[in-house]
Length: 312
Ligand code: GRG
Image 1 (tube, protein in one colour):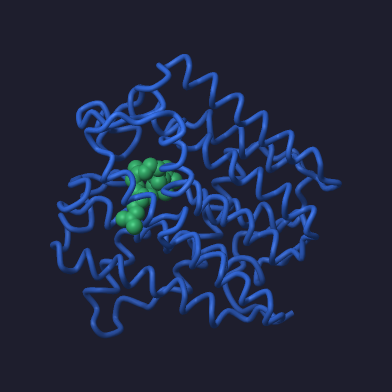
Image 2: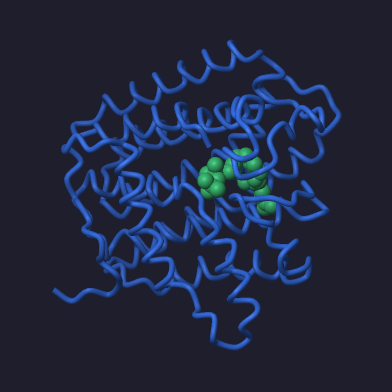
């Protein structure tokens, strides 16, 4: 077999082994990191400062949730590491770009991310802006050059990723809604709309990309899309809960920021108990959607639970 990228440590296509979910995240995270290293421009290529800054934020840590979701979904259909990982890694490039830009003084103005000084604190604002831009661009270079055999799947993946990163019910649009709703009274429906876009779109996209690479039928894609939407929402509710209950050291970013900036969150709207109940209900709905599938859903169920049980 010709390998086109790193395959160390071993990649498992079996979703049925009852591997502990924490262990699955650790092992898959290492695989993602090997591929990211392989896919990113090396630091010694000119101009080194931009490649250093891109790698600084990309390898500062992080759970690798989005690429792992794409992997776990692709694994349902028996997709190989070589076919899955380049596309899965593009999700982490986009996610990291959004974090770098979100931390900038003009946005959230944060000093700490993934337990390290933020990109603009380390490299200055201009290079941080460009590092975010470069990660966004690198995602599309990677996706358009990865050797996925079927050109129609490649186009579908490009459409998924670009749409999820865009302005309509997507990352940038959600960030704009979040910024413009600061200091305003926000209803439950409005909060959901903001987070479906800002956080949910990329998580939904991760599941759909794994399904598309796996050649999912339209019925399977619909059920997996609903699963992706539900866990995207659950992720944000858990994020709001953690912002109130976890420490800065646990989170690797400034805790208590939402309350300090009087931001509308699931906890400010529903209280700690109400938000916890809502998160559990949304995860049950995600599980219900998976149960429509005639596939081994053990791992995706465990990931949904992990999303609300995580401590960081
Ligand atoms: C600037 C275009 C642009 C978008 C910014 C995603 C985002 C939109 C801002 C990030 C701010 C934030 C804290 C959002 C809450 C949800 C979220 C994305 C948390 C961080 O994701 P994790 O927990 O982070 O997956 P790691 O570090 O583990 O990858």
